[in-house]
Length: 301
Ligand code: ADP
Ligand code: MG
Ligand code: MG
Image (cartoon, helix red, strand yellow):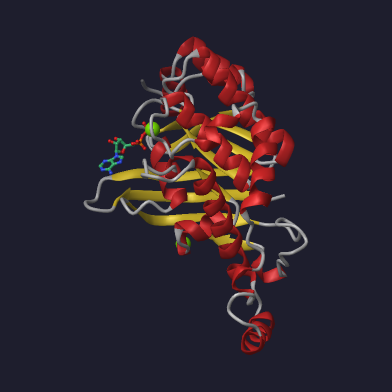
């Protein structure tokens, strides 16, 4: 079980002083689905980007924390008592990913000649290596240095724990079946000629492969036709049900919430969470829009 916690988060545009986030408080635990809703320009995407460490924004106050439990990353990774809570704001984006936080929009641009399979395997191995580095204790480091003199580079510890091509094929196949995806997807070149909907499905596949503790998905429903929306939604539900991933589902529209039912719904207004509730809150927003929340919170529309 892990918990992502935003605490009194304030952020502004890095170049300039326009304030965007004005004290966001939010907690997402593994296994939970949270919908973050709100009108355009309220700060939803900025929240996601700040969690990811996007350089366009400067955090002026508050924290982004991840709390881990002892066995969060399996038996191979020992998480000491003093390694349970990390301040993501002190860490690089790849370190944040290694701590179990997945940010959908980091999805890469088209890269020539790289298949989905290769890209995903590289991403998974990078995560494994980064995670080992973060949790490596000093004793192990010394032992490995000693070993280094006795082993040849070919069989040395460098590639230990790396997932090879054959093993990865098995993982990929299992995940694609879980997500009900066409096998041919994986053989295609990264993003080349992928439709909007296919890119979104690949984003979910990436999350399935990396098995994050918490995934932040920004507007993954935008521009999807109903069939593709259902496929993507099934995939998101599988992330939660099969691997216990907590989901922060950022969306302007209620539509996807018919398929991915949230445990908690939050409404963002002017850079903070103005109201939180259960799934019924999303339905109320569908019926009445966002203005009534503003009226309720500020007493004016
Ligand atoms: P949402 O995702 O809820 O629609 P955003 O987080 O994208 O909202 O944007 C919130 C506000 O911050 C908007 O007014 C937007 O114009 C402004 N904003 C976001 N990013 C930048 C940026 N890089 N430079 C200037 N203004 C920005
Ligand atoms: Mg947005
Ligand atoms: Mg701080």
